[in-house]
Length: 169
Image (cartoon, rainbow, N blue to C red; front, side, top):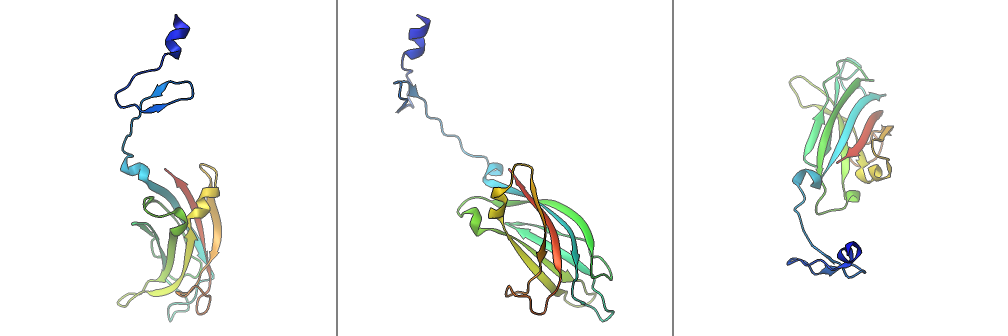
């Protein structure tokens, strides 16, 4: 009797799917919460080295702005240095809908802060977020990235930026 009860097909008004054993499966669709439709990108702006001179004093007052999706992180300004250490971190939310992860990049830009005038561009880095797919859960990419100019080349820029980047849901 017990065995027969387990093999009897289940009845459901919203069903329509059956398994190979003839058991009918109930189909329930639940909306995916907004927080699960976003990729949480963990970013750490560690340091930079070999930056260009941005001030007449022979140094720079650098800071870094990192964008991913609609979120951003801005580090503090480090005065009179070409090798700033920030160790600033944040979690940035990146929408996962409408486009593949290969079409999204983390964008980090280093500027020289100037009092009373616009800040000077020192270089930028793009990190494709598809690189995060190869990482194990809890693992982060930690490496130096060569700064490039706005056209993606290395003319009129110098230096590297060390970033730590990981992903979680």
